[in-house]
Length: 117
Length: 114
Image 1 (cartoon, rainbow over the protein chains, first blue to last red):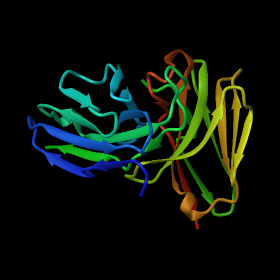
Image 2 (tube, one colour):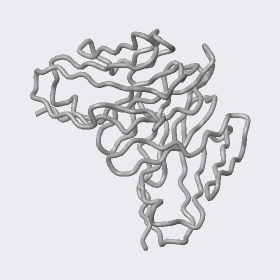
Image 3 (tube, rainbow over the protein chains, first blue to last red):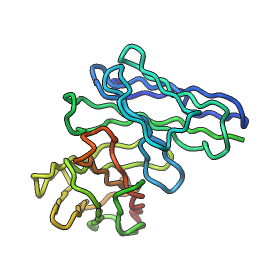
Image 4 (tube, rainbow over the protein chains, first blue to last red):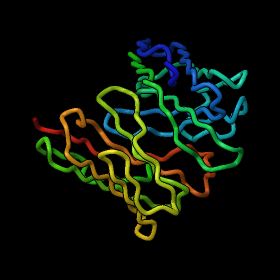
């Protein structure tokens, strides 16, 4: 399967714990995006990478959230001191774009569903 | 914040009928994309239409874009039970330059009755 993959698919944690999600984009896609989706809503942008550089972060991304893409391939999203309000589906997407160019087709992974008890 | 607004929020039709969903947005865009999402799953890309295009087809899908009205429509012809899903429009805002990712609406939940 050469699509975007995400692990784990489901995560249940207790409030206050740290969690980390992984996203493997489509090979050679230079852009990688993280979104969050709550029930009944569309996805909301969190952050994106152009290769290994994190170029933009939404104001939704509080200080408890951190994302990395160390070698410009896979990415991790960590949430520290989780809160019940963090419960959501976390989606990763990747695309091929020229630097500074408009977004092109983004291909989404299956998502990681986080439940904070 | 969510820019797009899909209309209707929910739509139920008989198999074989056509389904039309609309999307309105607020700012100037580079392109607009439609995605499908089955319950609890990831998003599947359906079609991308650029700001200088007015209509695009892909199989049973037809998308129109009216930048003067800041609106788009998605038509699914000869619907099938497998088309049951939520459909989202997503815009790439011109000022964002891709930096803000896509801005999604709340979606239209489509149910195809067999």
